Length: 254
Figure 1: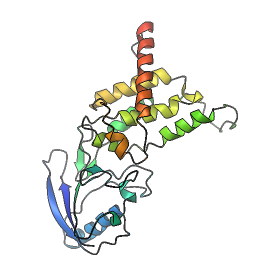
Figure 2: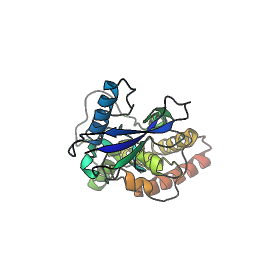
Figure 3: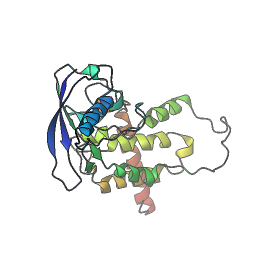
Figure 4: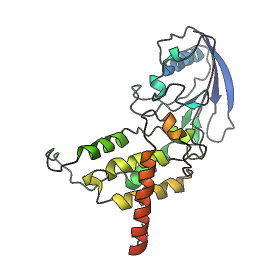
């Protein structure tokens, strides 16, 4: 395959940035999108040019690092697929492909296609934990969990924190990410002790980071590589409302 790539190049956060077009030949239809970018970088290095910076790690669809907008779509045209699991057979020979980083103020561009997602880390640090003893693991049957609750928690825990939900939302909302991270702990008995505090802290940290609010367009669910449901946002809103009332009645700041 021969492709034309329009790639966003930006030296650093302060740089204005611009699209630059590249031509890449001999791309196998069986290669992944990241392997195609590797091929481009090999060609650029061979010519003495600066390679394109992009994030990646596991290349198995489980880490969420490969965050790219491809032809205007977060993670590209295939549903429930990360960029590293997107194959070039999804494109046609001679195609022009536009590649750019996530577009959201809380995700500033570090270089080229790499963005800083430490705002997600701050949200997790504010409430993504439980009070539990350390040491050896507890017996599996010491805390009984109904299967429906376990299934819900596992569905929420599937979130890989890639940020596609933010990139797709016109409000740059992180509600789907926060909802998933809160729900996978709040649904289980082990997470009940911090449930109210967790929801209030995580939502507050999300707002402080500059993420927008949810207006139920559903783009986040549509592009989520793990197909996290909008139902979790509804659950987050209910939990937040209850926690806010409890905090008000108790006179607590949290």
